[in-house]
Length: 219
Image (cartoon, rainbow, N blue to C red; front, side):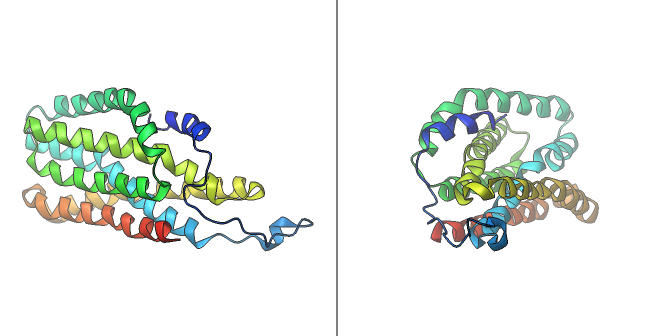
């Protein structure tokens, strides 16, 4: 749902927030002959893949944890999803305004940190305060990610490269695939009675994305 803000934001963001100079080493005769992925783009993909890794935990590891932690785990999980949808609808335009004043890399780093931080609050479930804190942080992270990832890819690619860059950018979804796999294996290995190391490790793997995105910021 967060991705509905992307098209609107691109109307307002006129400058390349990544501040990456255009490369001029492409020939007019055969622009593909000199095609080469920018290192900045690779760092971006690695960082956002880690964010998707954290993002995917809501529908897998966290849902299982709630079911184990509380008899009303199913109802609480449904409540979290409903609150997330409401928050995204209410906050999308304020987030649009805030994120448009920052570089894409810094916004994506914030998104990554929010995903990682949200995973740590899960340890306090099913206390109401921590449930609310989790879903606020998680929803903000989703909004920041949706608001700036596509825009960052668009600004990195030259006009004749955009199709290839946007196609390759889908590789970040591997994080959504690996997230449930890693979470499920950790549950099988340690069990829910050792939930602290499970969520610490999941948060740690997620926050690795900030390192990669930091490389984007420095370019």
